[in-house]
Amino acid sequence: MRRLLPSLLTLLAACADAGTSSGSLRYYLTADPVTLDPALSTDVQSGEVVALIYDNLVQFDVDGRLVPGLARTWESDSTGRVYTFHLRTGVTFHDGRPVTARDVEASILRALAPGSRGRQWPLEPIEGARAYAAGTAEGVSGMRVPDDTTIVFTLTEPLNIFPKFLAMPVAGIVPTPTPADFAERPVGSGPWKLVSWTHDNALLLARNDNYWGGAPKSDSIRIRIIPETSTQSAEFETGQLSVVEIPFGETARWESQHGERLQRRPAIKDLYVAINTRRGPLGDLRVRQALNMAVDVETILGTVMAGRGVRAAGAIPPGIDGHDASRAPYRYDPAEARRLLAAAGYPNGFALQLWRSQRAELARVAQAIQQNLAEVGITVEILQRDATSVRAAVRNGETDLYLGDWWADYPDPENFTWPLFHSSNHGPGGNYAFIADRTLDSLIVRLRTTIDEAEKRRLAREADARIFELAPWIFLWFPVDMWATQEGLDGWKIPLVFTGQRWTDAVAAP
Image (cartoon, rainbow, N blue to C red; front, side, top):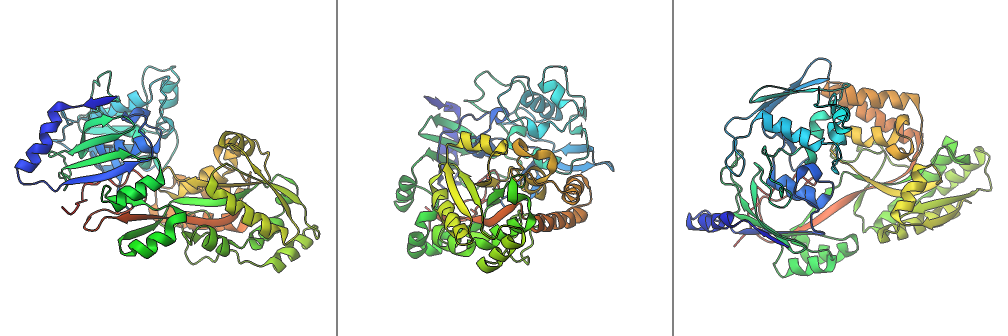
């Protein structure tokens, strides 16, 4: 199905006629967006395009920092429960309507609508949001609009990451009212306007010359749908894409042929093996330490992943407050691993099951771990299942070891501590190691509630050190993203958060 907005087609020609055209940027997605309605956006593809068309009160920049969006300033009260946002004046939607605090209020209510298929959890900390979403309240008691440029949120409890929740796609601001076909014909206030969307083929966006942050430096972006990595690479090499992500298996070839055009950046992502601390010998710290010392992570990283990773000595990745680059990872020491196993009462080892999904890139990692553990007497059976089955087993505590990854929803140390290691989140909440430690719980709660940023950084570092000490994971690495850019492309950088690259500064050579 093709959706075309004729009135915007003239915009592209107008840019050229005015002598301000900087050409078209060429990007791609691996799948067609499910929707362009921020309230319903739950997939990465939708989120990337939503970030171009809409504004939020606040937003992430390319380095993952929280910066002003429609709100020029914001502050919290001394309790950490009340957040007040002050909007810019003179901002308009693409159709010319002014953006006011009432639009923000209506957008939040729309995203929390009962029965919505969207991702509502980032808005649920607002007092009354859960009741409204459940259909048991007529409004959200914790949201107040004193005037056209101010909106106040009262939360159910202190939460210093709440502003970052408002930078997520679900909190994109839309005009009121919205048309019935809004998901196909969106109107936002962001730097780009939708011109056309040919499903499963391409989207065309034109720059918003009236954007409050300054018009984008290029006149349009064409976003094609290209699922196959081989096709992506071929299209880039023939000049049909401005940038392309490099698969791990293709690292060496691209480094040798296009080294000067490559960008690298550690992703806010963990690759790890969760150790279920409730299952037999795995409850013993010495056993978990032995597992870490028995796995030759450096060799696996170098051979299986072409060195595309930063060794992990904790759960918080580079680029996030709390990451300690000076902390040494577990050393590969099979002899010490065997000594620890004997001290724990397992001189002859034992048998374990390692669960993983059917993702091809995990197969060789799992096999290498299996071989390493066999060398210290631990027999590992690898169980490969579909993602749904693996998820159910892990959440129900039925696995000994689980090889998986964690990609942050927002760039904050809380996202690498609270869901993964707090005892309230055992199983479905994300704590697949079922670790329970009072000291760690206390650190994590204080980390997410303090309003002192310096104290938060200190607590994050201390919490990550405690996580490493408890060894609830076999700590592997933080993957490194690698992208190639066309010669002459300026103003583009790999974003730390997938919504952080809005292409406003990108300019392609003619």
